[in-house]
Image 1 (cartoon, helix red, strand yellow):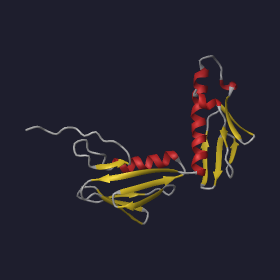
Image 2: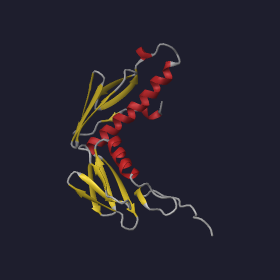
Image 3: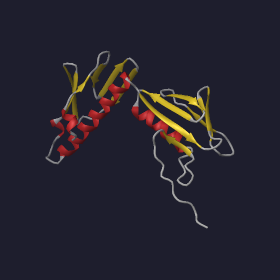
Image 4: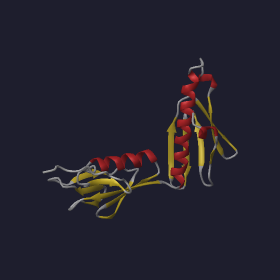
Length: 184
């Protein structure tokens, strides 16, 4: 178990957290998220804080404590990410490197020219917002950290950075170590 899971999660102003029959629902100014959880932990709300405590009823032998503590840390992180998501949101920025490589939005689809013989078309999910502030920059944002990361990874997978030339789609700030090419 992480040491962080021993600490409570503070609930900011304007955010409500509900715990009902194995689900946690977090509502905030940016939206609403729900998460199912297993009975290894007890999630309690006290004094504007969320406590994740081990469920001792699930411990039948001493070796079960490891699993219970593991879930305690996992659910602490998931609920904390939900609270941050509904208050601030999450954002991933991608940059496109390469001559003639560019992206543009056409309605609910992202159309990218990535050096293939055809343009790559990506259907944007409804729970994620994608912006193209410049032809070589893509911004993926939303309230669910996992969905934002997944959509950004799917877009990046269309043309990952080439280790020899550096061309492709990469995260802003990602360092791509380039290999030395063939020698004559």
